[in-house]
Amino acid sequence: MAVRDGFLTTGAGLRDCFPLRLYDKAKRLGVWDPSALDLSRDPEDWARMTEPERQGILQISTLFLAGEEAVTLDLLPLVLAIAREGRIEEELFLTSFLWEEGKHLQLFRRWLDEVGGRPEGLDHWVTPSYRQLFAEELPAAMGALLADPSPATQARAAVTYNMIVEGVLAETGYSVYHNALEERDLLPGLRAGIAHVKRDESRHIAYGVYLLSRLVAADPGLWEVVEARMHELLPLALAFVEESFEGFEELDELPFGIGQEVVAEWATANFSKRFARIERARGRSLAEIEAEALASEE
Image (cartoon, rainbow, N blue to C red; front, side):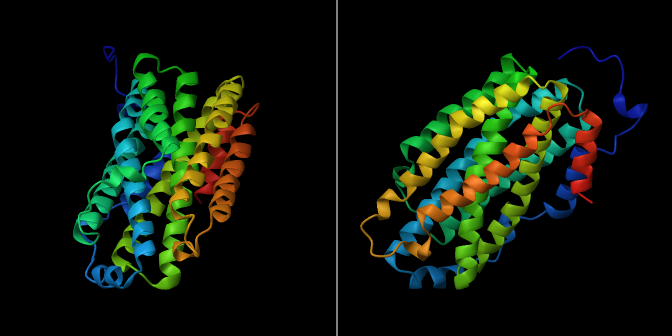
């Protein structure tokens, strides 16, 4: 770290900016404890489920658990890169971001231990595309920031983490999962936890879109980096969606009636919306990007 020649907050103070607004929301809405969730009714529901339904729950819970472990471990290089740029307001938000990812991990591990029967051998749910995304692409993109925290490397990292891992896979999975349980009034403890997770993830994705928009506005040439990375990883994400249904192909009816096409359409729609917003950042000023982001929080 470079020698510090002054202190940002003793002069101008903190800026009223989008990341600081997200930090304020995290302090209000992100204070929930996975250990305090009431799981008392979940074992009764679990016992009444069919075996395919239980396998479906174990599959998606395992993939969320592994994914939350990965994003918890891999976020630190971005925090460091932002801190080294002196973006104190963004770093404040990222501290809540990392704290929340750890809680998400704890939620699924607790539920699997206390309700799911502490199952073993869960790695068989990890498909080739999932492994490539979470065990190869994600740590490589985030780890690259340690040696090269340039805007281009930040853009590749944010596309990988916020747009694909969170914006396509996590958000889609959590929404479909929560809706399926809500419609059937199942597993209220887990459902309450997922509702908290969804709210946390919405802030994480909002920051990722802001970060990428800020980078592209400052250097429109970075759009090519963003676009290339998105097109590189989206097919891998959709391949994972397809792979995740392969274990249930022989069943007459998929668990909870969740179909592959519905999941893929949801994921693609969310991706396209954010893709277009970041593309619009080209040729816009940083002030315009900030104003749009702040307006979205009002």
